[in-house]
Length: 200
Image: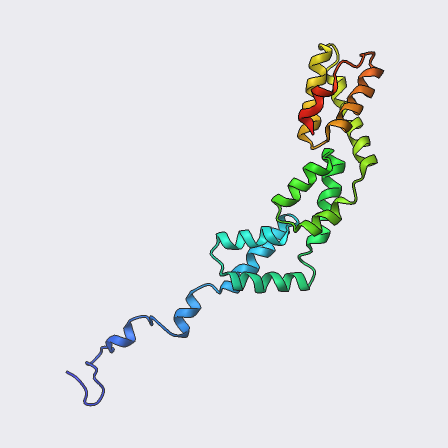
């Protein structure tokens, strides 16, 4: 039985009251806010380790954050100092050079992989000059040379040269460091210029 003017049966409810709304504010509340998602991604990433703007942008893209939303959040983080590509690039150059002995060539490649703009990278790389590279190359050769004592001199040279090449050292810097260290070990210079061309 229905009550006049109500469209309801006794003890029942109207069908449209029982079904969840498909549109409107309630439906929108069920969806995560894109800007909040972007902020959460950025904060999680930065809490784990320093990041460049490009790295954070890539992380947001993986979560399908719209580009305009990502840009707005990243701009805000930059304004408040949570993102600073210049400081990040300078920190990366200092630590990678000091801890891993990377030369400028390898450091430049790493900065590119992190999405650092060329002019920012160039400024950060100014922290490492030719004297720094020569000193770093010699330290690396001294350490590696100790582990190769007793091997054939040619084998020692090839291993030392390969190690320095992987760290981005130019052939001239590598040759001098290897010759100096091996000469102190009593090994006469044996490699001609042609042996080092592959390192440049």
